[in-house]
Length: 523
Image 1: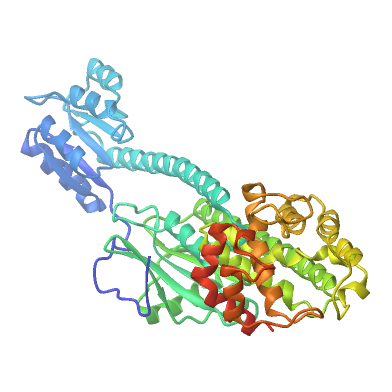
Image 2 (image 1 turned 180 degrees about the vertical axis):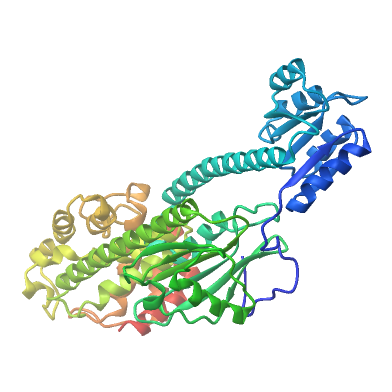
């Protein structure tokens, strides 16, 4: 969907805002019949289409939108009964009322008309007021039937729309404006013949105490355009008389008195929008105006808009709450990671850097965005088991004794027990337990080898080793990035390349400059 800064209303409107007059197809093989009907119906504002044969009438019905057919019975090629039967046999034409016209009052002709599916039977020279009244009645019934069909289609559309939203709903990546755009596409008029839909829509969004942002939506050249527009809505005035929000309001040009929102929408004339009717949804953070339907708007149109908007607001609220829970979860993980480093020498920055390194490697290995995001957070818990390691061992300035090393090597098992087996922390548990396992099987605590080691632990192993070599410890100095890269790739007798998954080591070589940047930034 394209976005522009200024609206252009000078060309290619999908349909005029005026309501379309009913189109009546007059079928008669004699010119006098057409003259009579024109004299009777043209002054009433109907648009008359003439056909002089049954075949011509059927072709016109296929090509254009007709609201009612006035059919002479006696015609030379195909009689009116057969034409009526053909009309009623086609699903897309069956709802068009057909009135059979005859110069004679014939019971047999009336019965045959009913059997053919005609809605009425009239004598050509019958009382003109009665003919006009029956035509008005049939057009009204057709309008109601079309509303019923549109209602059914809209119910299906709303249901399908809701199902699609639920199926694609990702609370952690929920984009409110993208969701609003999808609502607009469901409601707005896309082509000239969709007169049951609004010509354009105005949407206002306010986040917190920020100013309102207003957007104008309209189809131009078969493409939905969203344009930022200047608009100043007084929400308190618009929500009169009770000022209760949220609320849904609808009005037509003929309504009197009009609701206060009508005068507010007249401000749209500054951007060349003349409001004839509208359905308006008002709330403190979202306002949607569906403007210029091709028919008189009713409570039904309001309900359609409201149901879709309420879905969107519910999902926004749900996404916000889930994001808050997710933020709390992330904070708790990081807090636990900081607690694990409380007795170490690096003030918790080591765990953060390891998470960052792991994300770099995961992305380089093509493991996907979600995996990279998960390991970035959960790898910070790799040393959580050190909570049970005596502080004097962690802070010892010199070389550790064998007994102290045995105690240190217990922290992977302790960490796995602390984290537990909650589904959200399965990766963290795996990393905590296995991040000291080595590709060649020389690691601990279980001596796993090769692909027996989970991929997340193979990644964390290299990330942890890189950062450990960069930092000074009581028993060793700190190394710069070049030295650490050389040790990981070539070995130094203590750390060897065969300790690492070859693919993970290759990913490190291809992205080691990012490791250097991370260490510099988080120190």
